Amino acid sequence: MDINSRPFSFVFVMAFVSLYSSMTCLRSNIKNINPIVQNFSNKTSAQIFTTKTSGETTALANIVSETHNTPKEAQEKNSIQKKINSRVNQTNSTLFPFLKKLREFRLSWANFPIKRPAFIKGIYLTNATAISTKSLKHFVDRSRKYGLNTLVIDTQGKMLTREQISYIKSNGIYPIARVVCFDLGLKEKYPNKAHLDSIMQEVENAAKAGFQEVQLDYIRYADEPKLLRLPLKFKYEQINHVLSRARRLTDSLGVELGADVFGRITLNEHDQIGQRLEIFGDHVHNLYPMVYPSHYYGDPEKIADPYGTVKEGVENSKERIPKTRIIPWIQGFAMKIKESGLSLPEYILKQLYAVDDAKGDGYVVWNARNDYTSTWKAIKEYDRLVETRKKTHPHSKLSRSSG
Image (cartoon, rainbow, N blue to C red; front, side):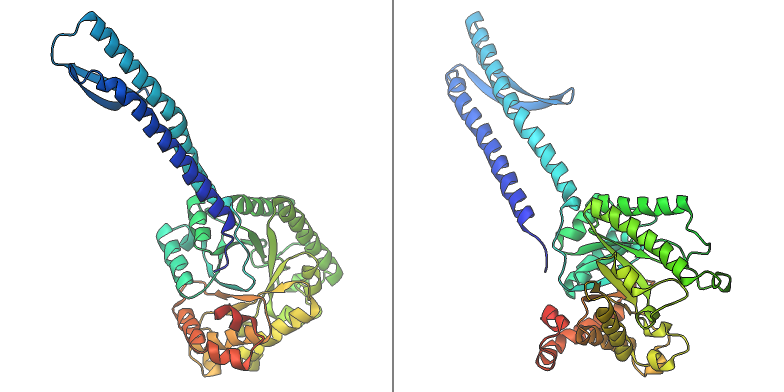
């Protein structure tokens, strides 16, 4: 599990040292008071307890006399009570603020960075799935069980709470926020300034919530005839502007920038939707080509060959933009898999092997309904055969990661 444990270890050590010191101080204070109380043991019995008054904890000494107290005894008992109150209040003045700060600190773990996995193994979660603590815990637990280390989560809608992001990170899962820029593609010549501002605000919100990477989707022009008249150079300029602005923002926030592109972009030098690998490679840390075999419309060979289709897309991307991490989206749904003659778990497994053999930098499985039953089966089968894969493909990243 890739997680930077040093900050957490340091915090725990310092927290418990401080807590122990505070409790030691409390025991010491009470020990110093005991001899004073014991001097009256032949005349009184002492009961010391605490109560809350006006939001503060106050110590009371209820000393019950066996006989009527003389004025001198009453004065001495009053002196004892003041000493007890002073000692306990002194301890409370340091202990309770410390405990309060410790609780606040625990809730702020969402902003502690964890080490980015060298090889991404992730799944996608919708916003509705992720904001439900019950379902979020289910997928975190499943991810740990099957060796995944990343969750790509839609953040548009309702942002996850600090406690939820803390839970993700504390389980060694790397959180990535997915932000849709132009739903189904940009349909006008220029991006609307107000809309673009709102997208940048979404990026900032995700980073401040504790996500360590923001992945932008739908940075492209709509695939519509009316936009064909726009020169490709103009489209490239507009997309370059969006990516450039996003990169400046993420750099200032200390998070990584990722982006999605169509699978066909890995094969095309130029495309009418305005996406080009080299432009994206100039700005993003991580590129996520959507190499779902089912989406190569009009190409039955690619649809029927999940291994070859994914491998080709990853290899082409790495060759064209070698300084950018290539992490393909792979198909975790059953659309058009009949053409391959494979079951869905087998179809997914072939794609995992393709990422491995193409020396990709990871993968993320897409299923819009977050039904990963077949994905778990595929990963389980891969793990069962991992030793064989290591022997036949000793240099593959996935083999090393899965072992």
